[in-house]
Amino acid sequence: MKPINKVRSSFAVNIVVFAVTILLVFGLIVSAVGYISFTQSFEAEYAESTYHMAYTATSLINGDELDSYLQNGGDSDSYRQSAQYLDSYCQKMDVTLIYVIKVDTTDYGRFVSIFNAVREGSSYTPWEIGYERETTNEEYAKVYRELYEGKTEYGTIYRTTNLRGALPHITTLVPVKDSAGDIVSILCVQRPMEALTNGRRPYLVTIAFSTILLMLLAAIVSYVYLRRQFVAPIRRINNEARRFAKEHVQGEKLGRDISRIDDIAELAGSIDLMEEDMLTYIFDLTTVTAEKERIGTELMLASAIQSGSIPHTFPAFPERDDFDIFATMNPAKAVGGDFYDFFLIDDDHLAISIGDVAGKGVPAALFMMVTNILINEHTHSGDSPADILSLVNDRICDHNPMEMFVSVWLGVLELSTGRLTFANAGHEPPALMRRDSEFKLYQSKHGLVIGAYKGIRYQNNEVQLEQGDKLFLYTDGVPEATDKYNCMFTLENMLIALNMNKNKSPQKIIEGIERSVADFIGDEPPFDDLTAVCIELKKGGEENVDQGNA
Image (cartoon, rainbow, N blue to C red; front, side, top):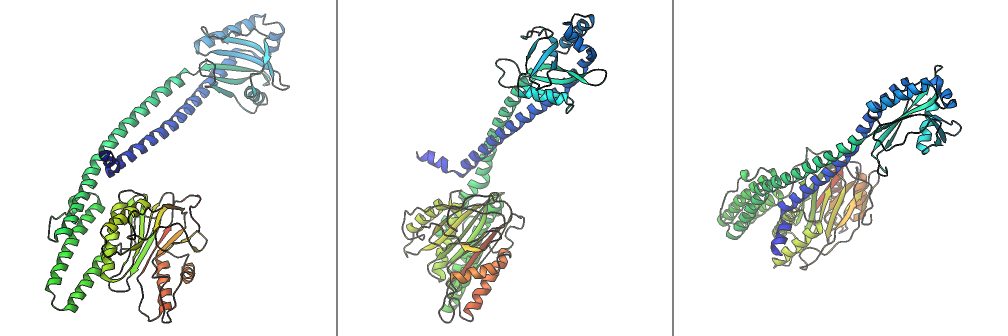
């Protein structure tokens, strides 16, 4: 079972399966659309050409003499000549039937046959002149009425299903007029449509064969590409990071040419830079003689590393116009235990996380960086937020001698639909603003903080965001900011500050919160780290039912 589970958890395999599934669905959609379009185009062509056949056939009969034909039972040279012309026309044009009927215009429910030509070899039996019968169905009666009343130039009736063994065919009906221009009867031409069924079958076979070939090609290309450009580079980066964490000596330079994928190349460059910075940091610590200088250097490097470990360039995604995001982290000391992160897993999925380590200073900062790296690593695997937090919790609990813990909120936003899937490990509830409404706390189920107990399984929650909705994430440094009278800022004041700036951009909203907190605490030094993330969905989203309580 282990090899099977390893294959199932393989990133490359999962991407290949996803690509093949998308192609399969695409092939089915193309087949259905093509099938319908092919049928409609074919039927339209048949209708046009059959109309011209029927219209030409009306010139073979004399509309002024139809009543006399019925009266004398067709016993005239003129009737026999017209019947011969129609029969010859029927054989040469390769149509099944050509018949002329006089319809009872009282309710269009009955008609009487005047001419009836049948193609040789057909299963139809010709009607005799004067043969009466009821109209086939309401569809025919409607066409009769429209023709007699002059509402349409011709009528077309298709029969491609429920044929009781007969072949698909089309019947085109045109009016027959006398010399005064009055409609005196209707001429009908029935034409077989074998080419329709004969043409659709090869089309479907071609689409199916092409889809299978594309699926195989996509699977092979995707697997090879992902193995070379993603899986293998990630393994090298992971191995190098583990080696450096164990040995603390300069090792292999990964280089930015490790992969053509920019994110992987940047990660490799960051690892190289981290090793250099860490080695420099270690060297500086050993050479600094004064304790104060040593501590200052330590804090400076820790702050730089901590700051460099989270996104800090805005706008973060200048090429994207479907969402806007802004974030800030203000440690209470030189380094802190808060963190946030956001990145595109792919073009349609944005990962967002925020956390707060219990504690301050360098230990909290290191614990924060380990947690952030683990979350980032597992999020790229495509697991759900709940599964990711469960894995990270187990990893933290395995190596947590100081028994530290961290609250984390992790979400993955599907940008095309606005569906946000998130899990909460003991973190503050976010504030959600619906379009044209106000910010409110969004309550949902959450689990214990990460690092408390091994084996905790977290729960996924979902909320549907729509265009114009905004989500505000924060650490307890916002509501618990304390003034000189030891009074807290509170969640109520936070919501008031948010709603004062609700119509502004995410950056302006966070700047408004920072101003409100700064005005509240005055000259008092900050008691806790203040971290906030705000995102606005500008495009996408759909109506749906939220799973949670706003």
